[in-house]
Length: 139
Image 1 (tube, rainbow, N blue to C red):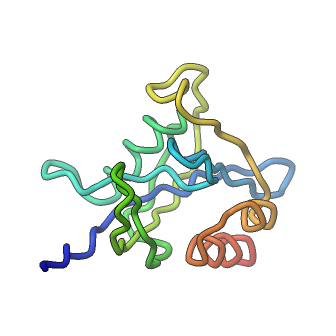
Image 2 (image 1 turned 60 degrees about the horizontal axis):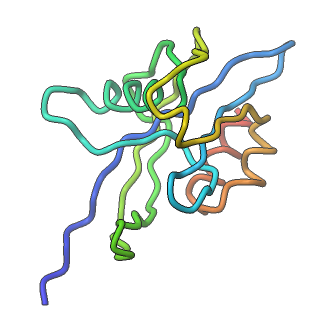
C-alpha cells in the first residue's frame, strides 16, 4: 500500500489594525465549518506568497500586501472529499489587508470574521494554527 506524500499548502493570515489593536480574519472551511485561514495548493505560475494572496481573495474577499517570507509553518491534516486524511504542511504568510470586498468568489460557501488574535486562537481547532495566532498576537 503506497502512502501519499505530505501535501503543502500556502495560507494567508489576513490582519489589520483597529484603534491600535491587531485583528485577524478567519474563514470557515467548506465541509466542516471549522475556522481556518484561507489557503491553497501550490500553483506552477505563482510563488508561495502569491498563492496565499490569491486564496485570501477567493476565500475571504480581502486584498492587501502579502509578506514574501512565511511567518509560520505548521503540520496539519487535509481532509479530502472521500474522507481520507493526508498529512499537510501549511506555510503561513501575513497579509496586511487594504481592501475588504463585499462580493468575492466563495462568499456563498464560507463565513468570514475578524477576531483579535486571542479570540481567533480560541475558535481555531488546529494546534499549529492556534500557536501561529498566539505568536502573532504576542509579537
